Length: 562
Image (cartoon, rainbow, N blue to C red; front, top):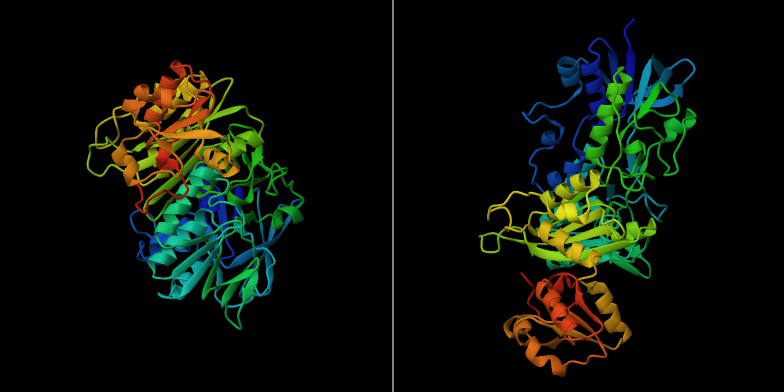
């Protein structure tokens, strides 16, 4: 008798699981079930369809050669039976039966399985808000959402995005490109929470504002105003006019079917699985946004729903369901986003995550061009490395800027996976030619700075901590060691200017009994100034990490740094 494999959910994880299972066991009878009419589409591409970057909706549902991945495609090319418009309403684990209900028919029917794969995905995490039923309050999750959102994106109208995460910011850019007035509202105190630390997120927020997007952080939405259709968003004590609202506050795993079947739910609220993607029932697997996984650094269970993870988990679940052997070790939470002309990426732990996990850490901020500075088209990027202080082990990287951040994020993702230290990262043999990087790639430079900090040679302080000192009225000196021309272009209010080349001559004008924080454009000269002052007997000298390029606050000039 043929092995019967049933997969519930026909998008990234489910489609991958079914396809891989058929390749592993070509004699298996595989049925792929989805409650929607569209299957195996790239939901992450929805904002780009809305903005017209992707011209046709079919492109999100097609193979690289343009063949639409519909039921007919899966039947003829993959040998997989597909049932769409059908919801799984129950699992009988004793008889190994899935109970189904077609949307267009109230009658129930069933399919039997030898192995079952749950790829039920996730749903927008929608809080109970006043007047949620008003028209033109949308989410960004399905093909139907994409088509409706594009239809409602009317130039000149006002849109509010509730949620400043990856999808929220991509959607904000898409609607702005359609000519809408856009406001992003985030309840936490920064954009991209969980992806970036606050000082890195502030660079993204600054870029959003420069591109005409209003940003409201630390703001809680309480409801919506309007009659019939939404007209405003109620935020704390004010109302924001809105003709269109997009809810993007994050997602929750679809675990209802698993819970009713008595499967174990993990501490994260998602379906618990082992490294084989096996649930608490040995005949049932789960993959994608509905299940949890392990973090490769902490070993803790985490819920980080990403399309890349879903595909990898689906592959493992499909292999094992078909009788093969595969495992999925876990994730680093590697993610990346493009917002207008800026790119932001992350792998591993942020500083805040590392501290919350109890690690003793060191961090550095290092901005530099993504190519040789003299090569046309070089763009700035800022890197933030996080390392474990006792061992030097790299724990995480964040990268933000107009230049190429992706290859730095990917390089560090590989380094962390294999347990690299700052010393090892600094010696990576990275590709060099002026169109691609400086001779000392900014990742290598960042690792060298981190090594100096870990060894106690370099003593840094973050821009946010410097700003706090200023706001608190702390008695310290902020010393700008750039050139007079640089200072005249843009400067930090209250900083004292002594160019690095004149510093040795001006030592007597500086107080030896006061904390001094040095900085320049990227703080390379700031670090050199720290070493000069250390050698001259000054006792409390630090340099400001990242220099003025990572200063996220208002500068004494209307001219933005390029």
